[in-house]
Length: 321
Image 1 (cartoon, rainbow, N blue to C red):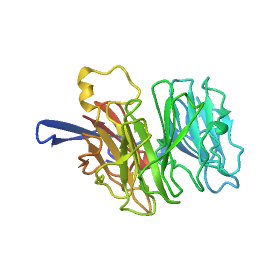
Image 2: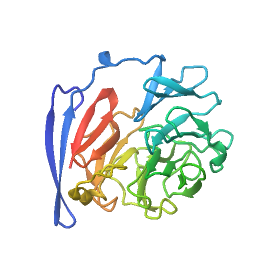
Image 3: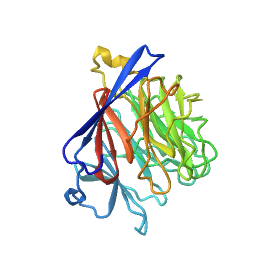
Image 4: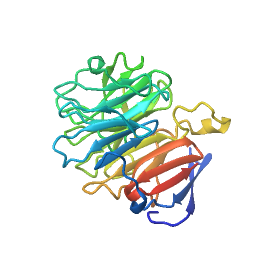
């Protein structure tokens, strides 16, 4: 797909549910944006991790003190001054209300919240105590998920237990819940998403191992988690996405056929540029590989007909069901 000029497409047809239903998956490679066309922001030497209603940027490791910025319309709104803080991910409920999540520092998560889309306040005192070494993974920028008007979940790892941190009140209070995912200083929960207030999935793996990809589901809002069948991807799962497009309420009736359909993309050590992808029609009970889909760090859907993988070298792949 990478480097294609124009469009290239193919169809994959899968029979699921004992042959009673067929899903068609359409893949279209989008023209790669060459590096010569990339534009540098007003701040030099940035690694841009996440885009949406804003942007998180982080200084590259050769800076004396790693720093993070939160930007919107290319105006710096917040500059991190906390030593060892690293803002991995952020997510919004509305264009004005969102949260940003950092690795823990001295047992505290120095997380942030905005209620006007412009100014950011600390909610560190609202967060659960961190486990020793507990952190999240910037990976695809999906370690934070929001749903509805006030629900949010954060995926963590880096310690002895991979956890989810959950709020039901917009970040005023949080609870921490254990997951069965592998966890260590190089492993844990990397990506999380919920399709409604109660049903969600978390996934991850070990960045130092290529045989540890795992995923789990919850049907009680993230309080308890159950491992899915093993996903058919090596490495660690960097991103998962519900196909119906989380947070959208203008569904067509047929879109509800995809309520339980999830797509994942994974990457493999040591270079993290040649991983694979897969999908499940039933939240991890059965899995299907997506042949030839490789080197993508993230995937997201606006609807079942409009999803995109993005990855190394500026490559983009459209996926439709």
